[in-house]
Image (cartoon, rainbow, N blue to C red; front, side, top):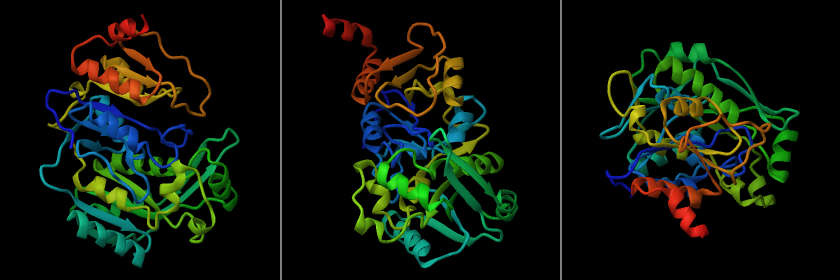
Length: 335
């Protein structure tokens, strides 16, 4: 466990559906654990650390749904760390044996407090890839879900529901890699529900591949956690077990954050919030996206920091911890 109160708190994001070259398949878990060793607390969106059924995140990584990170960095909410554990509400279109087994595994190994409910109105989730190679999404059933859970007692929600995607798109992904087609609809539906309920909402898909694939195909390393997974959900339960809650009154605030770590060639709500609030943004050049090239805003010294890779990013963060100018170190190294 990496936990040093003298170190900085940071945020690390790997956006979904835009083809991040690192973490665009099944997490950037290795890189996140490296960065967490340089931090007191590291806030990370699910896509950064969730590798289907695998979640080996360091204890000081706080998993926070993506739109909740945006609201936090914008100063709209606080994040309140859980002193013990969360009560998790699992919602499924159908409560199948595989869902029950995955939940029981989390109960047995992590000691999770989990209740399963069947949705009165199923969530319909559709994923695809557009002509630019980016993920697309559509969904329905959110208003009915929000109405159903109003009377339930829980700290956060884990959704375990199917995602419909064409066989052509799925097989192209497994054979050729590229953008994970399921990530965007998961992020989009989590945003809608988290914002309306003021609770963290996470999602894992049900049966998004044929059972025989793991025996018939060898995929690239970054896809392996997906193809060997059975329910895709255990990673979600581990994060939800101790993830921070949304608070309007107290807890960690955006002023407690000392950096945002981001892939190259993406600029969205978290970047804008950090830029506006003077939180340094560290951009990792080797982690590219499929988005059209962007022009970064002009920034005062130290507001946007470009580095080559996550090893260099870790060094920059450690230099910030030590109150030492990373530029001075690089200057001496280059000399």
